[in-house]
Image (cartoon, rainbow, N blue to C red):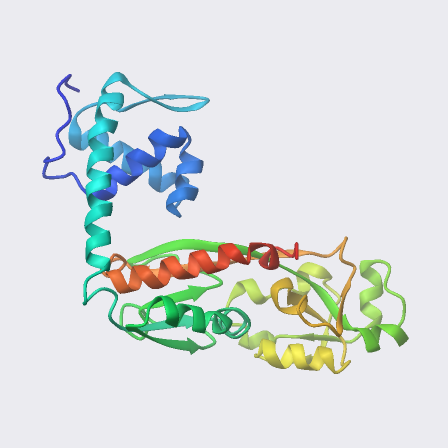
Length: 309
Protein backbone atom coordinates (compact mmCIF):
# COMPACT_ATOMS: atom_id res chain seq x y z
CA UNK A 1 0.00 0.00 0.00
CA UNK A 2 1.24 3.48 -0.77
CA UNK A 3 1.42 6.53 1.46
CA UNK A 4 -0.39 8.85 -0.93
CA UNK A 5 -3.70 10.47 -0.10
CA UNK A 6 -6.57 8.26 -1.34
CA UNK A 7 -8.41 9.79 -4.25
CA UNK A 8 -12.17 9.16 -4.63
CA UNK A 9 -11.94 9.33 -8.39
CA UNK A 10 -10.57 5.78 -8.59
CA UNK A 11 -12.57 3.76 -11.18
CA UNK A 12 -13.51 1.12 -8.57
CA UNK A 13 -14.67 3.66 -6.02
CA UNK A 14 -18.38 4.17 -5.27
CA UNK A 15 -20.43 6.33 -2.92
CA UNK A 16 -21.71 3.15 -1.26
CA UNK A 17 -18.13 2.33 -0.28
CA UNK A 18 -17.89 5.74 1.41
CA UNK A 19 -21.03 5.09 3.42
CA UNK A 20 -19.53 1.86 4.75
CA UNK A 21 -16.27 3.61 5.56
CA UNK A 22 -18.03 6.41 7.45
CA UNK A 23 -20.24 4.01 9.41
CA UNK A 24 -17.24 2.00 10.62
CA UNK A 25 -15.16 5.13 11.25
CA UNK A 26 -17.93 6.60 13.43
CA UNK A 27 -18.75 3.46 15.41
CA UNK A 28 -15.48 1.55 15.49
CA UNK A 29 -17.44 -1.71 15.33
CA UNK A 30 -18.49 -3.77 12.32
CA UNK A 31 -21.63 -5.02 14.07
CA UNK A 32 -22.79 -1.50 15.05
CA UNK A 33 -22.03 -0.17 11.57
CA UNK A 34 -23.95 -3.10 10.05
CA UNK A 35 -26.97 -2.28 12.23
CA UNK A 36 -26.87 1.37 11.14
CA UNK A 37 -26.59 0.36 7.49
CA UNK A 38 -29.22 -2.39 7.85
CA UNK A 39 -26.87 -5.02 6.50
CA UNK A 40 -24.69 -7.84 7.80
CA UNK A 41 -21.42 -7.84 9.71
CA UNK A 42 -19.80 -9.84 6.87
CA UNK A 43 -20.97 -7.38 4.20
CA UNK A 44 -19.45 -4.41 6.05
CA UNK A 45 -16.14 -6.25 6.46
CA UNK A 46 -16.13 -7.17 2.77
CA UNK A 47 -16.86 -3.59 1.65
CA UNK A 48 -14.10 -2.12 3.85
CA UNK A 49 -11.60 -4.65 2.45
CA UNK A 50 -12.72 -3.79 -1.08
CA UNK A 51 -12.38 -0.06 -0.46
CA UNK A 52 -8.85 -0.41 0.92
CA UNK A 53 -7.88 -2.57 -2.04
CA UNK A 54 -9.35 -0.07 -4.52
CA UNK A 55 -7.59 2.89 -2.88
CA UNK A 56 -4.38 0.96 -2.15
CA UNK A 57 -4.20 2.35 1.39
CA UNK A 58 -4.88 0.96 4.85
CA UNK A 59 -7.73 2.93 6.44
CA UNK A 60 -8.19 0.91 9.64
CA UNK A 61 -6.16 -1.04 12.15
CA UNK A 62 -8.02 -4.18 13.21
CA UNK A 63 -7.80 -5.19 16.86
CA UNK A 64 -9.97 -7.20 19.32
CA UNK A 65 -11.74 -4.02 20.45
CA UNK A 66 -12.78 -2.96 16.95
CA UNK A 67 -11.64 -0.90 13.98
CA UNK A 68 -9.37 2.08 14.63
CA UNK A 69 -8.62 4.68 11.95
CA UNK A 70 -5.05 4.85 10.70
CA UNK A 71 -3.42 8.23 10.09
CA UNK A 72 -4.44 7.91 6.44
CA UNK A 73 -7.97 6.96 7.51
CA UNK A 74 -8.14 10.10 9.67
CA UNK A 75 -7.18 12.22 6.66
CA UNK A 76 -9.64 10.44 4.41
CA UNK A 77 -12.63 10.92 6.72
CA UNK A 78 -12.63 14.67 6.05
CA UNK A 79 -12.92 14.05 2.32
CA UNK A 80 -15.60 11.39 2.84
CA UNK A 81 -17.70 13.67 5.04
CA UNK A 82 -17.54 16.50 2.50
CA UNK A 83 -18.80 14.14 -0.19
CA UNK A 84 -21.52 12.93 2.17
CA UNK A 85 -22.69 16.49 2.81
CA UNK A 86 -22.81 17.26 -0.91
CA UNK A 87 -24.71 14.04 -1.60
CA UNK A 88 -27.26 14.82 1.12
CA UNK A 89 -27.70 18.32 -0.30
CA UNK A 90 -28.24 16.92 -3.80
CA UNK A 91 -30.78 14.38 -2.54
CA UNK A 92 -32.64 17.13 -0.70
CA UNK A 93 -32.75 19.23 -3.87
CA UNK A 94 -34.04 16.29 -5.89
CA UNK A 95 -36.66 15.40 -3.28
CA UNK A 96 -38.17 18.86 -3.65
CA UNK A 97 -38.44 18.50 -7.41
CA UNK A 98 -41.66 17.79 -9.24
CA UNK A 99 -40.60 14.28 -10.29
CA UNK A 100 -39.45 13.08 -6.88
CA UNK A 101 -40.94 9.81 -5.67
CA UNK A 102 -43.52 9.39 -8.38
CA UNK A 103 -44.93 6.15 -9.71
CA UNK A 104 -46.49 2.85 -8.71
CA UNK A 105 -44.93 0.45 -6.22
CA UNK A 106 -46.17 -3.06 -5.66
CA UNK A 107 -45.40 -4.37 -2.16
CA UNK A 108 -45.81 -8.07 -1.39
CA UNK A 109 -46.18 -9.01 2.29
CA UNK A 110 -47.45 -11.87 4.48
CA UNK A 111 -51.01 -11.59 5.72
CA UNK A 112 -50.11 -10.85 9.33
CA UNK A 113 -47.70 -8.01 8.52
CA UNK A 114 -49.90 -6.61 5.75
CA UNK A 115 -53.32 -6.69 7.42
CA UNK A 116 -52.46 -6.16 11.06
CA UNK A 117 -49.64 -3.65 10.69
CA UNK A 118 -48.93 -2.04 7.33
CA UNK A 119 -52.54 -1.49 6.28
CA UNK A 120 -52.89 0.73 9.37
CA UNK A 121 -50.03 2.89 8.07
CA UNK A 122 -51.52 3.59 4.64
CA UNK A 123 -52.99 6.99 5.54
CA UNK A 124 -49.71 8.24 6.95
CA UNK A 125 -47.78 6.82 4.00
CA UNK A 126 -50.09 8.53 1.48
CA UNK A 127 -49.73 11.83 3.29
CA UNK A 128 -45.94 11.63 3.20
CA UNK A 129 -45.77 10.42 -0.41
CA UNK A 130 -48.79 11.85 -2.25
CA UNK A 131 -47.31 11.09 -5.69
CA UNK A 132 -46.75 7.40 -5.01
CA UNK A 133 -49.41 4.82 -5.77
CA UNK A 134 -49.05 1.74 -3.56
CA UNK A 135 -50.28 -1.76 -4.40
CA UNK A 136 -50.28 -4.04 -1.35
CA UNK A 137 -50.40 -7.72 -2.29
CA UNK A 138 -51.13 -10.22 0.48
CA UNK A 139 -50.22 -13.73 -0.63
CA UNK A 140 -49.02 -17.05 0.74
CA UNK A 141 -45.55 -16.95 -0.79
CA UNK A 142 -42.95 -14.43 -1.91
CA UNK A 143 -43.71 -13.01 -5.33
CA UNK A 144 -40.97 -13.02 -7.91
CA UNK A 145 -39.04 -9.77 -7.87
CA UNK A 146 -36.99 -10.92 -10.85
CA UNK A 147 -40.15 -11.34 -12.96
CA UNK A 148 -41.48 -7.95 -11.77
CA UNK A 149 -44.45 -9.53 -9.97
CA UNK A 150 -43.55 -7.21 -7.08
CA UNK A 151 -41.12 -4.35 -6.57
CA UNK A 152 -40.50 -4.93 -2.86
CA UNK A 153 -41.30 -7.93 -0.68
CA UNK A 154 -41.60 -8.48 3.05
CA UNK A 155 -40.80 -12.10 3.85
CA UNK A 156 -40.57 -14.46 6.82
CA UNK A 157 -37.81 -16.49 5.19
CA UNK A 158 -35.64 -14.66 2.64
CA UNK A 159 -34.37 -16.40 -0.49
CA UNK A 160 -31.00 -18.06 0.00
CA UNK A 161 -29.73 -16.97 -3.39
CA UNK A 162 -30.53 -14.55 -6.17
CA UNK A 163 -29.89 -10.95 -7.22
CA UNK A 164 -31.48 -9.49 -4.10
CA UNK A 165 -30.73 -6.93 -1.46
CA UNK A 166 -31.97 -8.48 1.79
CA UNK A 167 -32.31 -6.54 5.07
CA UNK A 168 -33.85 -7.56 8.37
CA UNK A 169 -36.79 -5.34 9.29
CA UNK A 170 -37.31 -6.66 12.80
CA UNK A 171 -37.57 -9.66 15.06
CA UNK A 172 -41.07 -10.37 16.30
CA UNK A 173 -42.26 -12.60 19.09
CA UNK A 174 -45.14 -15.02 19.41
CA UNK A 175 -46.83 -16.73 22.35
CA UNK A 176 -49.87 -18.87 23.07
CA UNK A 177 -53.19 -17.09 23.43
CA UNK A 178 -56.74 -18.11 24.25
CA UNK A 179 -59.99 -16.24 24.63
CA UNK A 180 -60.84 -15.12 28.15
CA UNK A 181 -64.18 -16.95 27.92
CA UNK A 182 -62.48 -20.19 26.87
CA UNK A 183 -59.80 -19.99 29.57
CA UNK A 184 -62.29 -19.20 32.32
CA UNK A 185 -63.81 -22.67 32.03
CA UNK A 186 -60.87 -24.67 30.61
CA UNK A 187 -58.52 -26.99 32.44
CA UNK A 188 -55.70 -25.20 34.29
CA UNK A 189 -52.52 -24.37 32.35
CA UNK A 190 -49.45 -24.37 34.57
CA UNK A 191 -46.81 -26.11 32.43
CA UNK A 192 -46.21 -27.13 28.80
CA UNK A 193 -47.56 -30.65 29.30
CA UNK A 194 -50.92 -29.13 30.23
CA UNK A 195 -51.21 -27.86 26.65
CA UNK A 196 -51.98 -31.40 25.49
CA UNK A 197 -55.33 -31.21 27.31
CA UNK A 198 -56.49 -28.35 25.06
CA UNK A 199 -57.56 -28.06 21.41
CA UNK A 200 -55.16 -26.06 19.24
CA UNK A 201 -55.57 -23.86 16.20
CA UNK A 202 -52.77 -23.71 13.62
CA UNK A 203 -51.64 -23.74 10.01
CA UNK A 204 -52.43 -26.57 7.58
CA UNK A 205 -49.23 -28.57 7.78
CA UNK A 206 -48.75 -29.37 4.09
CA UNK A 207 -49.62 -25.79 3.08
CA UNK A 208 -47.15 -23.96 5.31
CA UNK A 209 -45.44 -21.63 2.84
CA UNK A 210 -42.58 -20.49 5.09
CA UNK A 211 -40.56 -22.62 7.53
CA UNK A 212 -40.86 -19.81 10.07
CA UNK A 213 -44.59 -20.59 10.44
CA UNK A 214 -44.02 -24.23 11.40
CA UNK A 215 -43.86 -23.65 15.14
CA UNK A 216 -46.28 -25.98 16.97
CA UNK A 217 -43.50 -28.55 17.31
CA UNK A 218 -41.27 -25.92 18.89
CA UNK A 219 -43.82 -25.53 21.68
CA UNK A 220 -44.52 -29.24 22.27
CA UNK A 221 -44.06 -32.16 19.83
CA UNK A 222 -47.34 -33.71 21.01
CA UNK A 223 -49.60 -30.84 19.94
CA UNK A 224 -52.09 -31.79 17.21
CA UNK A 225 -54.26 -28.90 16.00
CA UNK A 226 -58.02 -29.46 15.86
CA UNK A 227 -58.69 -26.54 13.50
CA UNK A 228 -56.23 -25.59 10.76
CA UNK A 229 -56.24 -22.69 8.30
CA UNK A 230 -53.77 -21.12 5.90
CA UNK A 231 -55.04 -17.70 7.06
CA UNK A 232 -53.83 -16.10 10.27
CA UNK A 233 -57.00 -13.98 10.25
CA UNK A 234 -59.11 -17.17 10.33
CA UNK A 235 -56.95 -18.54 13.14
CA UNK A 236 -57.39 -15.34 15.12
CA UNK A 237 -61.17 -15.41 14.60
CA UNK A 238 -61.40 -19.04 15.74
CA UNK A 239 -59.34 -18.22 18.84
CA UNK A 240 -61.56 -15.27 19.72
CA UNK A 241 -64.61 -17.54 19.31
CA UNK A 242 -63.24 -19.92 21.94
CA UNK A 243 -62.29 -22.79 19.64
CA UNK A 244 -58.98 -23.40 21.40
CA UNK A 245 -55.47 -22.09 21.90
CA UNK A 246 -53.36 -20.51 19.17
CA UNK A 247 -49.79 -19.28 18.71
CA UNK A 248 -50.04 -15.66 17.59
CA UNK A 249 -47.65 -12.73 17.15
CA UNK A 250 -47.76 -10.27 20.03
CA UNK A 251 -48.32 -7.33 17.69
CA UNK A 252 -51.59 -8.95 16.62
CA UNK A 253 -52.86 -10.65 19.78
CA UNK A 254 -51.97 -8.00 22.36
CA UNK A 255 -54.42 -5.61 20.68
CA UNK A 256 -57.32 -8.02 21.12
CA UNK A 257 -58.98 -7.21 24.45
CA UNK A 258 -60.78 -10.57 24.57
CA UNK A 259 -57.56 -12.63 24.34
CA UNK A 260 -55.29 -13.65 27.17
CA UNK A 261 -51.64 -14.73 27.18
CA UNK A 262 -51.01 -18.37 28.19
CA UNK A 263 -47.77 -19.57 29.83
CA UNK A 264 -46.18 -16.26 28.92
CA UNK A 265 -43.11 -16.83 31.07
CA UNK A 266 -42.46 -20.28 29.60
CA UNK A 267 -43.47 -20.18 25.94
CA UNK A 268 -42.18 -17.48 23.64
CA UNK A 269 -40.97 -17.85 20.06
CA UNK A 270 -39.00 -15.39 17.94
CA UNK A 271 -39.31 -15.02 14.19
CA UNK A 272 -38.15 -12.34 11.73
CA UNK A 273 -39.43 -10.09 8.95
CA UNK A 274 -37.07 -9.33 6.07
CA UNK A 275 -37.23 -6.68 3.35
CA UNK A 276 -36.23 -7.87 -0.11
CA UNK A 277 -35.47 -5.76 -3.15
CA UNK A 278 -33.91 -6.56 -6.49
CA UNK A 279 -30.33 -5.29 -6.51
CA UNK A 280 -30.82 -3.52 -9.82
CA UNK A 281 -33.65 -1.36 -8.47
CA UNK A 282 -32.83 -1.08 -4.76
CA UNK A 283 -31.58 2.48 -5.17
CA UNK A 284 -34.48 3.75 -7.30
CA UNK A 285 -35.80 6.73 -5.25
CA UNK A 286 -39.43 5.57 -5.04
CA UNK A 287 -38.42 2.04 -3.97
CA UNK A 288 -36.00 3.45 -1.44
CA UNK A 289 -38.74 5.76 -0.10
CA UNK A 290 -41.05 2.79 0.56
CA UNK A 291 -38.27 0.76 2.16
CA UNK A 292 -37.25 3.66 4.40
CA UNK A 293 -40.88 4.18 5.41
CA UNK A 294 -41.30 0.52 6.38
CA UNK A 295 -38.15 0.57 8.52
CA UNK A 296 -39.20 3.80 10.26
CA UNK A 297 -42.79 2.66 10.84
CA UNK A 298 -41.70 -0.66 12.30
CA UNK A 299 -39.13 1.06 14.52
CA UNK A 300 -41.92 3.17 16.05
CA UNK A 301 -43.83 -0.02 16.88
CA UNK A 302 -40.78 -2.01 18.04
CA UNK A 303 -42.22 -2.75 21.47
CA UNK A 304 -45.38 -4.20 19.94
CA UNK A 305 -43.40 -6.53 17.67
CA UNK A 306 -41.20 -7.67 20.55
CA UNK A 307 -44.08 -8.17 22.94
CA UNK A 308 -43.13 -5.38 25.32
CA UNK A 309 -46.29 -3.37 24.81
